[in-house]
Length: 429
Ligand code: AMP
Ligand code: GLY
Image 1 (spheres, helix red, strand yellow):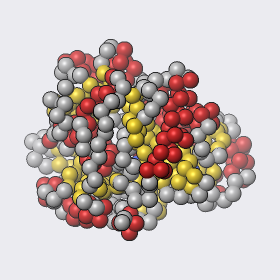
Image 2 (cartoon, rainbow, N blue to C red):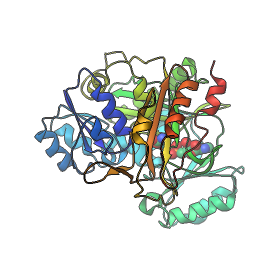
Image 3 (cartoon, rainbow, N blue to C red):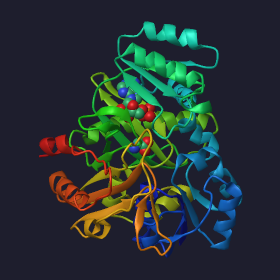
């Protein structure tokens, strides 16, 4: 099978890496990819959100399966075009991708489906006064979210009403996130540990849960500072039992798939459930319509069965092949540029890549990198630069391998969290 992965970040590097190791896969292409994907696949220059460009590459390269990594091409309807041309595609059509493309719509689907979630209200242009009044009535813990896509940065979680008010004003005016923020969702603040559950969906009403992961959203040690796309992740998660996963699958995911079906939406791809385990039970914070990044960088390395088969089955038929997981744990540490998430400094030469990659049990996935013309040097080219994944017999071992590799890396202003999976080691039995 010949597979084309769309995207160019750490998630796509992990997907290409996993596909390259799959017996079912003969050749992997990544468009546009990055210097890391070039080590495991053939990079193809293309604009992943342009359906016609993707279609042309898929035809030229005789692609059997397109795997869409990021949300933007999904929301833009790239899967719709590929499917209508008869090309097997992993990733939902634009109708299903709205779950991520509009938080207001997602909340409406959750309400119709009866899925537990935070209490909320939606406000649009000209409703600033009403939105500010709604904040006044809340219990001192505020969450303000852009309706549209904002690369994981459009969420403010705060106990300061002034900060919440500022977010409302800057979102609704378009100053902060352009059109993505001109509609916003205000919701009650919830507390509890978070869980990312990636569910493979094949268009039927039953998804297949992959191994649970936990993500670290805040930039700072001890979960401080602004939200990011994710600063690290690990899997498995010691406090997440099979019963908890089952309760999320039946109490949230299955209800959502049934509600989508009622709306004539056939969902194929990953449904990523972002859940908070509150004292009142699991509540859905958000759905994403693709693999989490960096969750993908810990979940894919733990898949012991053939990733290519699973993605192809989800794209084309019923998933019948069982997904097997290694008992090894995986921990990924995102290594970012100085100034991320607000204004990352880019263009610095990355030192120590080969040394980091050579650490036992470690794979360095590239996220925001570019290479020099002769491909001899690699430079920082985005906020999240690398995702360094360590695998091992326990979270403790996986974690120490990941950090050993991170210690090999250097560039001016190199930034990472020292506490990824630290608490999980304590809870591990
Ligand atoms: P989202 O993009 O909706 O998942 O939000 C990003 C992050 O903000 C989540 O992973 C949580 O850490 C936090 N967050 C979102 N919604 C809430 C909420 N209602 N209460 C507390 N924290 C939240
Ligand atoms: N790691 C969070 C996300 O992919 O949205």
